[in-house]
Length: 154
Image 1 (spheres, rainbow, N blue to C red):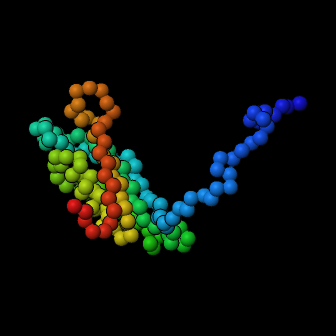
Image 2 (image 1 turned 180 degrees about the horizontal axis):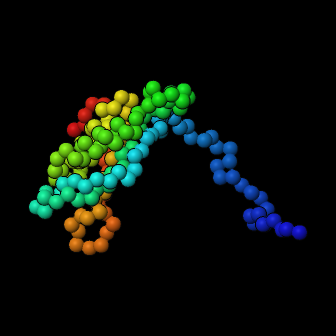
Image 3 (image 1 turned 90 degrees about the horizontal axis):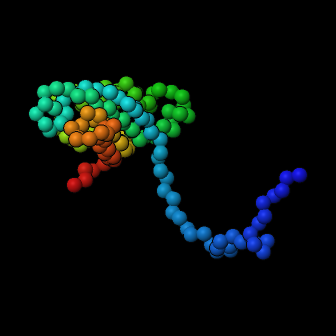
């Protein structure tokens, strides 16, 4: 025969704030649909040091584009689809277009390019540099930017 765990002392269970009205929370409709390209690998010129402007280094990027996927999902039609290949192409073109002195600047350029796609409301770009000139062991340096479509912020 199994034995159930004993309840609280006195045998009475009380719910905190029992009978109190729950606080009212205003909910906003939030689009949480997204497409992510994770682990894109490139060799490019990136960094401030003299050798970083001469020798390409490995760089890894993740890009998440937030947009509504409802119509594509409901219709199972590629007509309204954000094509992953187009996103990859834009990222590759941006990464390979020139020497980027700062990872932050590279992420900003990638974010701007991805936000230009129709329907993209927000974008998250993470760039990892595994061979950063840091005087100690580490896996990588990572810079992350998140941007939203709309008027530019200052």
